[in-house]
Image (cartoon, rainbow, N blue to C red; front, side, top):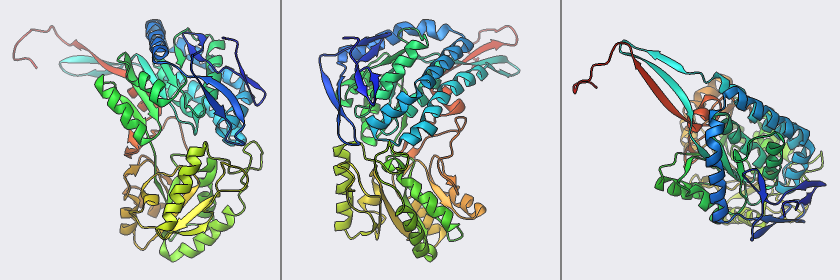
Length: 491
């Protein structure tokens, strides 16, 4: 059974789990299909609770030796791991495009290079985590970053390769071992990661991958009391279930959740630039948590901006994401497509105006036209809730105070975009409750910078030192500066 493979875009992909360095099958399987054309991709093993437990056992048994390695030794493993991803670049690109419907060009030029960097950057950064020394009159404090233990990594279907490696890099570089639960709707590039880890010589048990549904596989994983950390990216409802299970064992969680981010266009903005950037929000069919989906446009420039953005959007190519000319591909699943249609129809029924789009696209069953809805109230469902599809809303404001109230007027606080004269835009950005905000730009990221949200968009930060603070236990080794004399009055 260990030799069973799927043929996906001409590449062999194992449908089995990866536990303790071996491929393991399951009695239960689930079906995969490509969102591009709904063509069947094959059957994938679904982990039982017992198999999840065995993966945690393997990670627990591998932890002592892996954690004792020097940061330099782990760096060498992770650089070899990244190199193996590079050797299989075409497979990662073509498999994820087929499995998740993402743009092939984006995989080639952005995602796979970033996945490799996610491993090498954190491997190198771990070398800088030297003991911090704090000297006081009473003692010298040696502050250390100790690996926490077994970490669960749970990632979503919109960016499985990038987000898995984004968490995997600092977890492994810190000296932890991991159990990965890939997304049920797009698990295949995580399976390829197992091949790369194996080829790079990572010891058995350091990386384990268990596939399956959140209700069975995921629930068994997050409730395991042997976990030291849980890192999750996904929806708010799933995060609540994870946090509830983790609370029973007091397991710390890092939760990067949904967004309903504002895209602000001030009356002093460069409207051509803002319109061109606004059209980028449809990338990956707006299945991107950090996209600015609520357009807040000054009333004086509203009509001009709408026409300029319309002219850009009308030129977008909707189609097969494997074609170089395609800019907007399919949504991931029939359930998601129905969800998007429902949001749009309810908004129209409530009085929203369709500026463009508003209906499925004829290219295929899982395609939806890039859409913009106006005449929506601040408390409308379409404004308050994450659609996670190519549907944007447009509202106007007349003053900065009104704008700030509208921008902060949802339960989410992940990201944002603000176009305008730099000083004005920065002044607005400082008053918006969000984890990050781009000024006259979008999507600029650096692995050294913090990433995460506030309010219902999650807790914790990933990137740079922030990732290591989550994946490590911070320990203070205290050496007194003079002989210690025990006393009940000592504090």
